[in-house]
Image 1 (cartoon, helix red, strand yellow):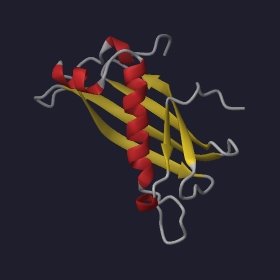
Image 2 (cartoon, rainbow, N blue to C red):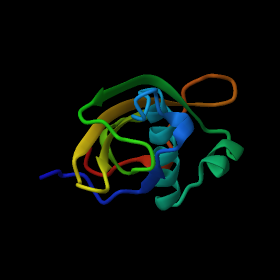
Image 3 (cartoon, rainbow, N blue to C red):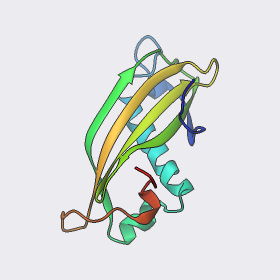
Image 4 (cartoon, rainbow, N blue to C red):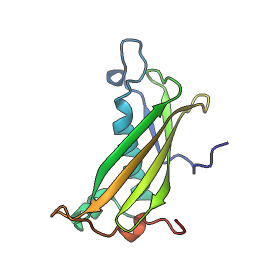
Length: 134
C-alpha cells in the first residue's frame, strides 16, 4: 500500500498525448507532473502565480520518471504528490501516478526544485512549501 496522500490532480489522456499504439507518450508525464505540482502548491495555500509575483521562482534542477504500466488514450490518471526532502532553498517532490480504472501504479517521479529570485540567486523557500519535520 502506498504512503502517498490522496491525489491532488487528475488528467485524462488526450489523443495528442499518445503514440501510434494509443499509449500515453513518455513525454506527456512531464506536463502532468508539473500540473500536479501546481495544484499541490495551490492546496497548500500558495498559487504558483502568487509565489512568482512575490519574487520566488522554482527552478527544476532534477527530473526523473519511471514508467511501470501503460496508460491508454482516454484513461484517467490520478497523481499524488508528497515532499520527500525539504531544505532552506530547495525541496524534492515525489509523484505517484495511478490509473483510475484499476488503481495500478503507472509511473513514479521525482523533481528537485531550487527557489531563486529574479536575479537567479538562491532564496529561502516560502513557508507554505516547507514540510515540518523534514
